[in-house]
Every structure is written in structure tokens, then in C-alpha cells.
Image (cartoon, rainbow, N blue to C red; front, side, top):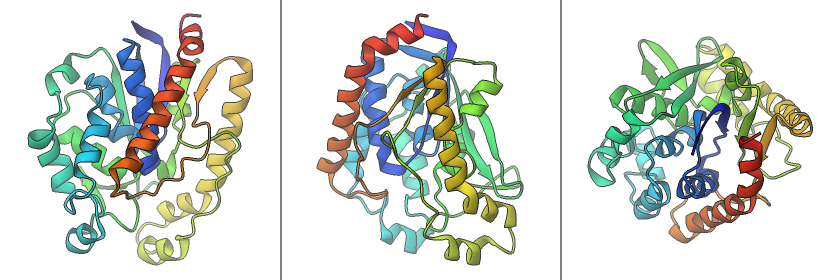
Length: 286
């Protein structure tokens, strides 16, 4: 079943995205597709498998390669400037090692948008991903490139980093497309309050002179995030947002080399996806 009149918003959160993968796999297994979707950071790089209908791909390749230094490691960061290897993750993996189904992606009715933070303007720019080609993958990489531990990604002469920096939960974007009712898939539990980034001194040192608006965004990120959560709560009460959250703090690091740890969080997502499925269907069919 495809739903055209509702939006789907996918938060990031590095390996908290295994929760997202679990929920999305349950939706796909039940043939439930929301045709307008936006993702940032992990929400983009894992959420694209929702459009390509590749059930299990996210957890499969993460478990398979989490111990491969070329995929994610301090060694990769020291040698390439990216803690998540750019060539391995955005060329070898989708082209050779766990092939991304571009044909299904292109034929899918799901409109998939990815957001990355423009370091000059300090705002999140959004790109409609339609082909799953090299340009699309460059946007995914930009969206998921965490500050300090990733190289800046240049797209058409513009520098980009982590989409979650400027717009961690892009509900406003989806509403701006005309969707007044939205499903919001979060990776933090009820009651979570974001704190200031502990790496702000290093961020100011690294980016402050050249990209002051980007630094300003990161300085205010926790306040913006917490206000967005408050808005989501209000819209839940109004019935215009259906929020899906982990039932508890996921307590998983941004870089994980233990496949069992990835599976643990993925299974939390699956369990929550199965639990909310009946009420989600009710929301979608209103």
C-alpha cells in the first residue's frame, strides 16, 4: 500500500540509525510505503533503502563490514580524513559489495529527499534523490559527514557537512512541501533533552574563520533540536504527527565494530515497528 498524502521524516544519529532500519524493514515487509520522505545523515544513507525496497540491506552490510577498517575506523580517519571511508562506503559498497538496486530505486513512486548543511549559509539544502547515481551518493555522503571526523564535501562548488547540523529533524521541510500530516521517525526516546556539543571548542577552531555561520548553527543546535521536539509533541496531540521513538535510550556509539551491538539496536527497531504498526495504519488511513 502506498500513501501519497502523508510525509515521512527520518532523523539521523549515526548508528542509532539501526533503529530506523529495523522500523523501515517492518514497514516494507508489510508493504507500507509513504511516498514522500526526507532523511538527514543516517536517515538519508539508510533510508534510501526504503525507496529501493531492499529489506535487510542496511543491517546486513553494516554487520558485514563494521570490522573492516576501510568502512569505519580511526585508521580510516587518519589515512583519508573520513572516519567512514568515502570510497568504500559510497562506491565499492553500493556498486560491488552489497549492490544498491538503482533500477527499483528509479522506478519507485517514493519521492526521496536528502538534506546536507551548507557551510556558507548555515542552512540545510535539500536535494531530490531520483537516480541513486554518483550525484545522489555524493549528497548522501555530504549529509552523513560528521564535523571534525569527516572531510568537507564539495557539491557544485559549495561546501557541505552533516545535514543534522542545521536540520536534525526536517519536519518543517516536509510541511513546506504541503504535507500537513507526517510520520516522524526519531532515534532518541521520549523525554530526551539535547545538550550543547562537547566538541564546540574544536569546531570553532577548525571552522570558525572560514565558516562562521556553520559554527553558529552548531552552537545553537541543541536549542533548535529541543524546540523541534516540543513542536512534535504538540502536533502529536493535535493528531497531525505520528512519532515513532525508541522505547529507551539506545546507548550505541557513532562507530561500532561489534555486529551483535548493531543487531541489538536493529531488533529494538523491529520490535517497535511491529508494535506501532496497527496504530500507524490507522493514522495513514484517516
